Image 1 (cartoon, rainbow, N blue to C red):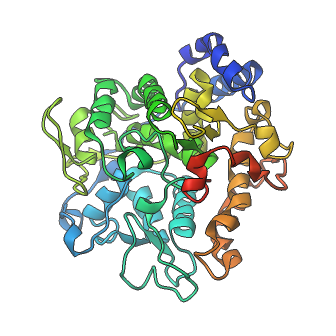
Image 2: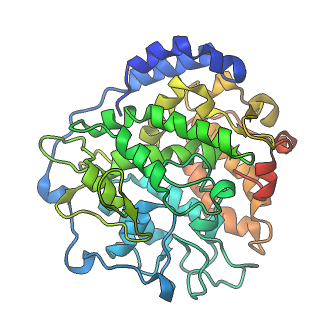
Length: 426
């Protein structure tokens, strides 16, 4: 995964941000820069037009969703497109195993990232104790099977109802829930900003690097317009960046000319169900489409958790607020970061998050610590429901030598009305 060396130079101008968020300091940023420089060199990537071609014909021909009849589409354009092409069930209610297979087969997402995201979505927004565990890629569904096990106490929310546990504020193309009234519909002005920021005739890794100012502007917009803006560790610090990183990483078309991919603007529009010309775009919800003659990431170059974390850290080098758990405190322009040391009861700090694998360690252990409280009321047996997620997290943390988080001081969240309004946040 490529890191722009210019990001390292920008550390020098980031001290005003560091002063505002004291849990992230200059040494932390320097440690991140060293890690980025050490890990940014990427092996040569080839192009195999047979192995990388993604079918959009036959059983994978595009079919429009019947939203009126109950087909579900939600905030993730990649999952919506997979359902429209038959890689996922057309109704949008999918077993976790099918989701893992689909994102690997169609997009080149690695098993570590695909498995964790599918299991997480199943546990928090679906049904993990069903005989076929899975979730809705949109809103709640009355369909039986996946979402109807006897151990459920209420209907799972699906991804469209996952605010602050999966979906979060500062999305690249969706609006903040408490400003727009929904968090799953594309907002044309934000899409236009992304479209304008997308570099042309440029390899995908550099296209991602070029999105930094847009990502920063979206973060600033949430601070300036949403008094309930909350930025938790998973839905904020990690999932929100996916809206910026995933399109260049997994929607870019690959070729001999661009073996690392190139996300041209027509492909970008297709994946986001947008038509028309710049300045006159229209959006048709649920109509996301994989373009014809489209080629995924190279075999052996799948998009992994470490690769994604490097993307997250690349932007954090330039604006450390993007690693800062926190939010507005009831008024706009009142963003305040959480004291990580206090939250983790001294196990982690802003400086240690930049060392080794601590960002991954902190995030995954935080999910484990907060999950049971968040799921109370959804499952009769929360421990049983959490077991798949626990197994996935333990697998990802194995051998990393993580400092052990023994609990959280959740009173640190009390100042954030966005946390309370959504029933918590992870």
